[in-house]
Length: 150
Image (cartoon, rainbow, N blue to C red; front, side, top):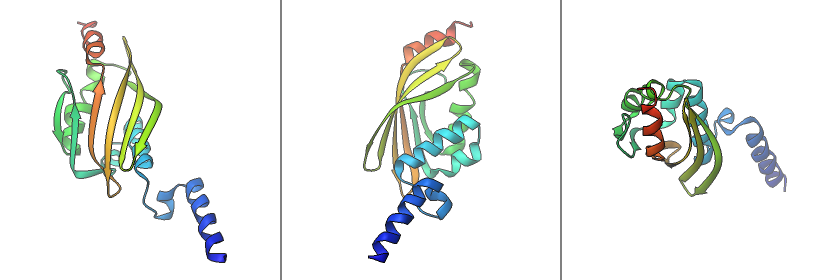
């Protein structure tokens, strides 16, 4: 009985202080939350640490950041450095989240100068790291807002 009670207390404590502070593996949803937090802070080192070395980062459409990017460095160079150039003030706000095993789908509000739309992001988390990401963005709204400054 003591072991069961201790296990329950530890699980509750881990959720309170954060599993990573106790050396416990984060759930896929927690890893995705950390990825958004590090992205929004501009902490690319922290963001990179949450992704596997074999990361496949896919942006659909025909925008400057579109394509299949392999690895964190390519993603930072070809996606994250492009966003503020074309969409000043780029920001993501989570609206909802759907979780099935190691797949996390996040419904987001996407805003920037001249842009207000929604998006879905799909993550696959394997062994505590994000292995793949695919953005289902409103590319028409993004394209039109990008060209307003031209």
